[in-house]
Amino acid sequence: MTNGTLVKALSLLAALIVAAPAWALFDKHQPTVVVSDPFIEMHTAPGRGYPVFYVAGRGEEVTVLKRKTDWFKVRSARGKEGWVPMAQMRMTLDLEGEEIDWREVDFEDFSNRRWQLGMSGGDFDGARTLTAYVGYAITPNITLQLEGGEILGDFSDGETATASVLMFPFPQWRVSPYFTLGTGIIRTKPHTTIVQTSDREDEIAHAGIGVDAYLSDRFVLRMEYKRHTVFTSRDDNEEVNQWKAGFSVFF
Image 1 (tube, helix red, strand yellow):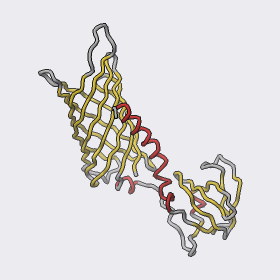
Image 2 (cartoon, helix red, strand yellow; image 1 turned 120 degrees about the vertical axis):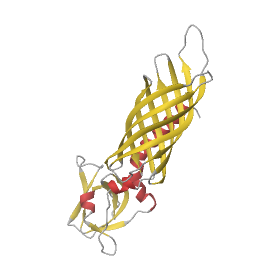
Image 3 (cartoon, one colour; image 1 turned 30 degrees about the vertical axis):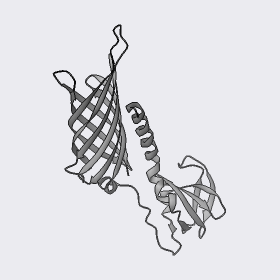
Image 4 (cartoon, one colour; image 1 turned 180 degrees about the horizontal axis):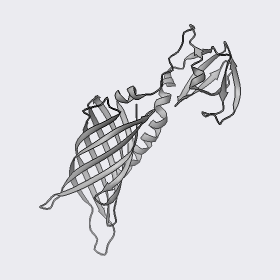
């Protein structure tokens, strides 16, 4: 798999994760609840701007199918399927008549996150860069991360693939700084010139610092600086600065 393919694959996965975590709870378990309010209104889509097409009255049972942020897709006993907001879902009971904890994603989930996927853009020694990454937290303080990147310059393009360790000294903070160390490869592809030059592949290592800032729901703002060392086949190595910022989702 080329790094360009890796970036596209990670980007697609990140896009799917934006929607998937909030729905995953009901993929295998679809609970049935009872309306305890006088009624709940079912919309045609998840949003107050969409029309109400069906009203489930008190005592009617509905099955929860999916969740998207603060909206739940439900099916009534008559087979009607629509979307109900969180505020009205809180007016339902389980089949034993007990209240249900319709828990929202909050900062506590951010502190206990396991998987994190995201995309970022920035500057790589004067060239534009786009990266996609996926990380897994083996402990609250240590995350293992894979990253693929594309570099777009005036005279050459490049691709990177790296594996990193991220160390979070204060994972419980809403704005959580981290240190990163990693290694990988960089492939440089010069633009076509009068004298044809071949592509070059070198090992690369980095050290850097960054910060994850929790926004809301499952969204995180990430800003990062890395100092790369490119181990070239020539006598001297290259030192490259990289700055980038972007967004990620966690679950």
